[in-house]
Length: 373
Image (cartoon, rainbow, N blue to C red; front, side):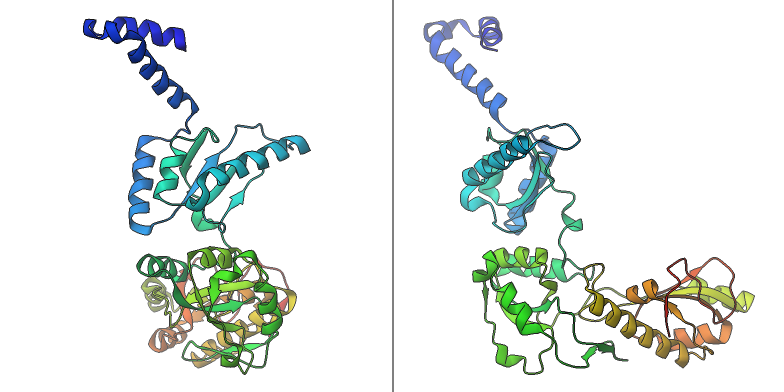
């Protein structure tokens, strides 16, 4: 590289620069050395990251520490990659969050960094390449699809701490989805035991404002105040099912498929699928055996109430897997679907028309044969 740089310099250096030939060449070599030892990123991606970090303060990046082949790595290779990751984290210092990190064990890691961190990544010798982490939205155990994650993320841009409800990952209690869409817990949970385990997590010092006296009925929902470090730790925690801003209301509008109604008017019936919003503890697939059963039972009861109000008789059995998701697929008559549309039960997230033929009032599913009645 030095020889190539010298040849290039000899061709392009102006005559007036020959008196300072050594100094100029030193600058050229320094630039080339910098390029050879810095992490690579496409300019357009870098510009996008810089735009995002200006808005949010923190962005998640994916970093290739070292290109390794597919397949099982030796223990020594794994240790070397772990050490390389730690060197990068040490280099970034306060410009990397201690929570929200991941590794695939094959030379790639992901983490949240700030504006200074992006600048350091652009010049580091501790990594080969970094990118926008496009896998970000698929990560996190408690990252719901109801807009709650984005609401907290946006709130933390405006304020260093926010008031939230932590929905802890308890097995108890059974619960009911009420007709207004709210969740009624039908007994106490082991919330304090789960909370004790949560508060031993390394990021727990960033969780403030917990007062157990505010939860005398021992529901799985705990009020707290958190910062960004706690937020990303909570989203990945095995002890948490959901994190929502205090008073959060999902912006997801219900979907009512007019084509299903039109088909029923034309054919006299239509096959439909109904999907519920679920309660405040709704989670798939991170549920234990008892909470899985309670979720399925709550959904089945709600679906049967909705269908009974529309005149579906007899009420169909719901396969267990579908019940856990809050899903029912069945054929309804023209009169029944008209009632469903007229009532627009707030527990319904979507009602869509499907293709297929089964008897009116009978469910159709490819799920396991186990059912809940």
